[in-house]
Length: 185
Figure 1 (cartoon, rainbow, N blue to C red):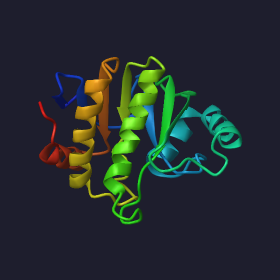
Figure 2: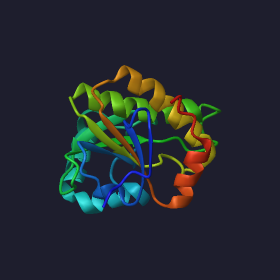
Figure 3: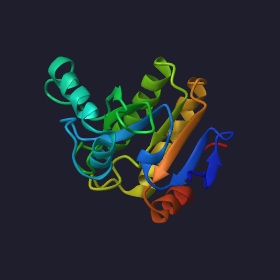
């Protein structure tokens, strides 16, 4: 059962612990690598559970729009395949220490671009993982500040997004986020 442990921004943002691929929302966000061909962590879990239709859609994106791979901070959408979510929004998070100090801007871009893409397509509910805080090494406390400030700003502009879920792999990640979030309300 997916029950929010915390809420922010007038109940529009809920914090969850568990498996992102269990969430029945309009779109889940994939912390993808630039190839869009799947990988480990959240990316691998989404491709495994969603089935080959997601990979086929990603291959089509590589052939048409992003032949050199998806740049860090950008977002694209595919079908959800066999996932409970109807769509997958793929975004590439920054690798900590590899972007000349632009990591915070690029992390914010991941969230902003994914939300704006969802809103432009009339989607109302989105579930995000903790982008870049795993093998990409982004310090979770610093990510919490960037993500919460970004969501605060973007959701003010995107009234159509009624529900945004932040899904953490474990309670350790959730606790760090809660301790370091900077939501305005």
